[in-house]
Amino acid sequence: MATFKINKVVLEEFEKLYAQGVIKKNGKPIKYLGGAEAMGAGVAFDANDFSKKQILWDGENHGGTMTICQINDNGDFYANERFYPIFDAPNCVVVYGKLIDNEYKMSEVQIIPYLHRFDVIDVGNEKIFVGATLAKSKENKDDWSKPGEILIGKLNEDAEKPFELTVLQGGITKNHGYCTTNYNGKRVILITGVEGLFCIYIPEKFEDVWQVEKMMSIEISDACTVDIDNDGQDEIVTIEGFHGNELNVYKKDGSGWKKIFTKAIEFGHGLWGGKLLGENRFIAGWRQGTKELVCFSYKDGKIEESVIGAGGTSQFSVWEQDNKAYILSADRQANGQIGQLVIYTLDASN
View (tube, rainbow, N blue to C red):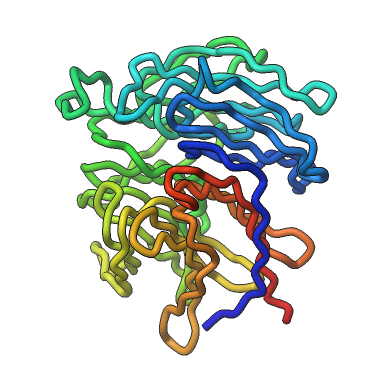
């Protein structure tokens, strides 16, 4: 079993915490962000002085934040708002945080109905938005008759201004997972839904062909890649089905996939995979039952587990700095419905 010395710091407590984001410059965090899924505030903490907190948006007129992502090296970010429970998001809007003198100025960019997960990536010399919608439209919370889409678009030079979007792939119901990663040496984006796992191969230029491969045809909530058994080929880690109760690892087996690991979980919510503290690992969280956030490693031919926390994470980010691993987690059910924006530090040197 991998052993870590774990330190936990709570940055903030507030209701319905859901989204988080780490803003970096020169590879090091400068801001930690958090937002609520219902009507609620958005906050930003200075990474070097937690006492310095900015209210990004108030909790009376704002909220419904599913995603926060950095968009450039200046420390600016996009987030979405008005994606309210339960699946109430016809007026979901992208908002822009522009960093000026270490404080964010917020503005609205454009409405993208039912936008659930998204990222801004570098393609050539351009900034490209890639997003997935939960549905195209809904009559009520139980209406899934109009599947969602994968959308792409080139950001405006002024990131505050709207940009044109085109549909890359349709027919994705209940999008949940989104992961910008690498798969066997190629830059990819993994997007999940009822219909399965979709892999987008990121081209060299925006104008080039964006290839979309349907890797799996089972309902998947989240997915990531990692070469967990260190054989030089990446495996796929999944949470199945929507907010599902199975954590699985699949290995490529000819034209199909072989399940090499499975674990029962409750309300699975969040995955990360990659090299961490010198070893290939993946991290998974779930919001019910034990509510654990767990790091999985490979030793002596089997996958081992190390519990990091038990706050019922809804979302987390992972990075390394100064020979330690860090996780910013939106621990959604750390105290009933009172969330905690938490930083876990993992030290494997002892």
